[in-house]
Image 1 (cartoon, one colour):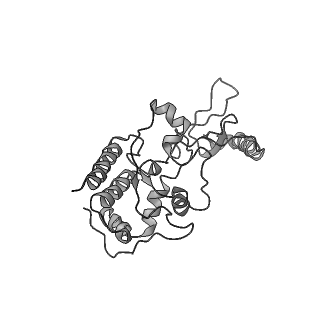
Image 2: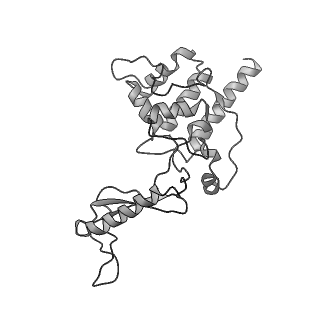
Image 3: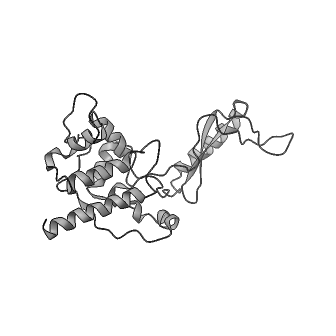
Length: 240
């Protein structure tokens, strides 16, 4: 093995090891397999040396995807965005409306969801009011809508996604737009999680200085509204 080829393989193994240890990847739920998507892509490009035209089909076979929609869903789960850290299942949050005859909030199980935005940084949370306090919920909702319409609320810093650009050199703006749809907009702080000020504070250390794996021709990514170069397969698809 020539020195250049050896360096390529070693870089790939280093990136894979980094991905395995990266606790910013989701471990369950939406986007839980995105870590394996990244690792699989690195492996087939740098180690298997899969031909460029066959890479999407190879990744689909390894991960058990049957169609482009499944791939788009997975990539969309990594689209940079802000989401409240305290999102809970429907009905699990109690009503925050203040009581008149006693101090403290209502405390009944909530059923009316209301968004509450922080005007200082643009972050938001979800409150759930009970059916008895629908009027209070409506007032909060109207206030929040007026606040957002005023144009003075800053864009919240993203706290989800952005891991793909940390490992693969693609045109991620195109890739995310294709996967997440027209409603997604790139954040002002950039697409890569390593560049986000909020993430730098959370991690508390400089981002790793590792060479990115060249996607080998995937730089442009899928066009907005287009499709990936994946030939649809019949059956369940094998893993391995």
